[in-house]
Image (cartoon, rainbow, N blue to C red; front, side, top):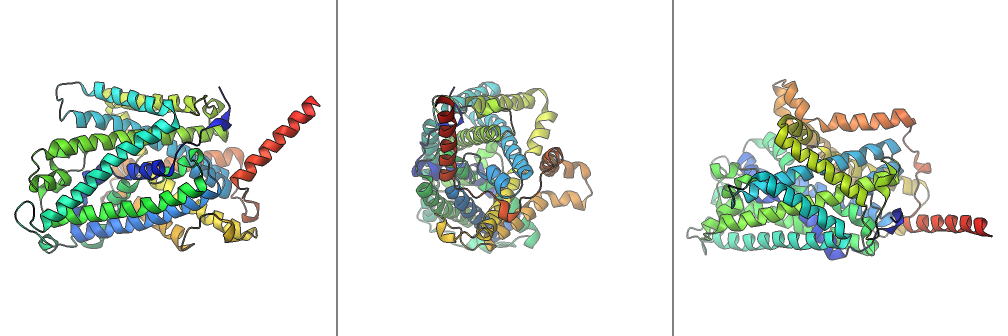
Length: 496
């Protein structure tokens, strides 16, 4: 086994763009977008997705600025440790690893649900275990095999959305499907805004979950070829594509299907027959719409599992590097894969999946516990960037030294921070109104778990928030060179 500094920088800009796109275009768009329109009306859904899209833009630029300055696999967990407080980085890393390890189990369970559409008599566990084995092999071969697999799976989703938008627009104008709808569904009933601000805020939560996965691009920084050029390029491309895909797709669905339609209530992968995409394709006269969309959703779920395996493996590797996890997880094989971190993550995913079969309560607990961890990671990105930029100025650095600069600082990270907190609070407002403490405990479990991790490290190691003038701003390349110099000096002293 080689040591930690043998990871391969094999990911290219096209891989990065598709990894971030693949992480965010999935069942949230293909299925759950219908329930968002049903809840808040067409105008409310568009406002919610635009608001979250804006927040994601600022988070991506914040992450891009830090990732081009310090392109490391640990991403925001490493930034939180270096720019805020080691306890914050510790909690952020374990929080994110836990999130994706559990999500991996959810995704392989969903694969079985999707395949049941075609093979109703085959036991679900056969599909799930086959999917887990496939994802493990893709990630075990090389980082390039992960990137290529993600590229092609994401491409299928992108092509589907483009075809959907083209067919949808032709249907709106009556060229396909007979009756032209134009904007008539935007004025039907209480549309365009149904239920006012409270319902728009509730859809913010749905939109937030849909966009999760975009931060994966930061984790790829440690294995990206020429990150200073690739990362900014990928971030610019990804944001506009995601926003256009989501906003235009919701607009098309809202034009063709009234918000009052019961068919928009589906929100799970098993609701493929009433996916808004399926309904629009059927309306346009595509008879095999359900089978086509089922194949696309299968690709989406496999893509999410693939990304989840990669993200959790790399975060566990980074925790091993920092000494926050057993050192064996920091070891890398000859192909540049942190193989023990990969095996460890796969075992946790497998155990969580088995819990869904043999002990549903344990599975429900784990899924609930990981529910808000993605938003907590986003808060970590916003806080880390705010501290990074303030430390950069406090230590006399000039912004011209940065290869990529996030626009609108400090407005960007502060807006992202406020919106993330609002989304977390809005996760289950009804339970607070009803004083349903059990439901509150299930919905918000991620928050106390994060606080426990943070408090444990802080009490054990007595860490403090790092003063701005003491923040370590050594660029990645200089840090690497200084480590090599130290090692060569040690060798010289030993052998001469």
